[in-house]
Amino acid sequence: MNDYISKVLEQTKKKNSHEPEYLQAVKEVLCSVEHLVEKHPEYEKLAILERMVEPERIITFRVPWVNDKGEVVVNRGFRVQFSSLIGPYKGGLRFHPTVNQSIMKFLGFEQIFKNALTGLPIGGGKGGSDFDPKGKSDNEIMRFCQSFMTELYRHIGQDVDVPAGDIGVGGREIGYLFGQYKRIRNAYEGGVLTGKDICYGGSLARKEATGYGLIFYVREMLNAHASCFKGKTVTISGSGNVAIYACEKATSYGAKVVAMSDSNGCIYDKNGIDLDLIKQIKEVQRGRIKEYLNAHPDAEYMEKTSDDSPIWTIKADIALPCATQNEVTLNSAKKLVENGVIAVGEGANMPCTQEATDYFLANGVLVAPAKAANAGGVATSAIEMSQNSMRYYYTFEEVEAKLEKIMVNIFNACKENAEKYDCAGNYVAGANLAAFEKLANAMKAQGVV
Ligand code: NDP
Ligand code: 2IT
Image 1 (tube, rainbow, N blue to C red):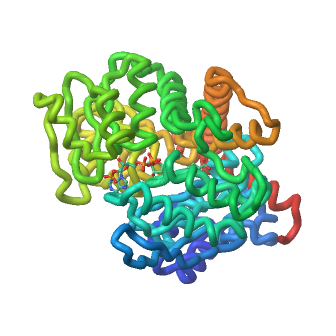
Image 2: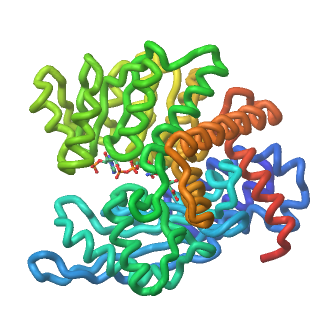
C-alpha cells in the first residue's frame, strides 16, 4: 500500500482505537483511492487525508426527559459535524439503543462522500441518540424530541447544519423536532430540517426517495451488464422507510420481492410480498413483521438467532440490504453466492462487512455501494431545502424526475471512475474515487482550514 495512506491509516487507528465501525469506513475509502493519491503528491503536503478523517466538530449532550410513569430518563445526544467543504453539514438523526460515537462518526464520514456524489451543495454530518423508540408512547417520543432539540437547536440552522431522519426517526419525530426548534427560535426557518410532512414544508417524494433511488441505481447497474429487474427474485432486509419504498419500485419494474425482515426475523412469501400489509403493520401499527403471518398463514417466518440473518439464506437474484450496518456477514455472502445472487444493492449504510464486499467482488457479484446507491434520500432532502428557500413546491413527478436523473448521474460517475482507475465494474471503488477527488479539490481551493 502507498506509504502516505498506510501512515494515515495507522494514525487513525491509534487515535480511534475504540471505534471499529469508524475505522472500517475509513479503511474502505483510503484503500480504494490509492491510484488517485499517487497521482497527487501534493495531497500529502496539504495533509488532505489527515483532514478528511478528522471531524470538524463533535457535539455530545445530555438529553433528560420524563417517561409516562413520571420517571426521569437520561439519554446521550450526538451531532457529528464532519465536513462543511461543499455545503452546510447535512445528514440524518438516528434514534437506536446501539448509537455511540463510532457509529455516528462512520455515518458522518460516509455522508461526506455520499453528499459529494449527489452533485448538490451539501456537506456531511450525522447525529442521534441511544434513545430506543420501541414501545414508547407518542407523548414519550414527543417529550424526548423536545428535550433533544432544546440542546441541538443552538448548533443547527438552514445555512449551518440541516438534520433529517434515519433509523428510528421518521415523519413523526421530525415534526416534533421542528415544532420545538420553531418555538425556541421564534422564526419559521423551514430549511433547518428535512423529511418534514408535506403539510408544513416537506417535499413530495422525500419519503419514497431513498428506496426509489436505490432501485434507479441498481437498474442502471444491471443495465450496464445487460440485465434488468424484470422477472428477478429479490430479498430486502428491513421493513422501514428504505426497505418499503425499494420494494415498491422494484415490484413496479416486474421483480418479485419474496422476503423482508425486521430485527427479530424475516418473512418469506413465495407468492411475492404483500406490501400494503407491510405498510399497515410497520407505518401505521408500528408492529412486528411476524404479524404478516396473521393475514398470510402460508408465508414462512424465520427467527434471527445469530449475526447471520436468515434472510440471506433465501435464494434470490438480487439482495438489497436495507436495515443496518454489517448485517451481511462473510457467511451470509457465501450463502448468497452459493444461491446464485447476481447483484447486491446497499440501501442501508455500510450493510456489508468488508469481508462480505470483497467476497462478492471476487465472485463477480455486482455491488451497488451505499454511498452512491442510497444517496437518493439526501439528494431529495437537498431538493426539499431548495423548495423551502424558493418558497415553492414541486409536484411529485417533478421531484421523482430530478431524483432519477441524479441517480443516473451518480451511477455514471461511479462507472467512469472505476474505468479510469483500472477497476471497471467495481462501483465500490468508483464511488470512493469520484467523491474523494471532488472533495480533495475543494479542500485545496479553500486553504488550510
Ligand atoms: P427505519 O427506522 O425506517 O427502519 C429500519 C429497519 O431496519 C427496521 O425494519 C428495523 O427493524 C431494521 N433494523 C434497524 N436496526 C437493526 C439492527 N440493529 N438489526 C437488524 N435490523 C435492524 O430506518 P430507515 O429505513 O430509514 O433506515 C434503514 C437504513 O438505511 C439505515 O442503515 C439508514 O442509515 C439507511 N439510510 C436511510 C435513509 C433515509 O432517508 N431514511 C437514507 C440513506 C440511508 P426493527 O423495527 O426491528 O428495529
Ligand atoms: O443516511 C442518509 O443519507 C440519511 N439518513 C438521509 C440524510 C438526509 O439528510 O436526508
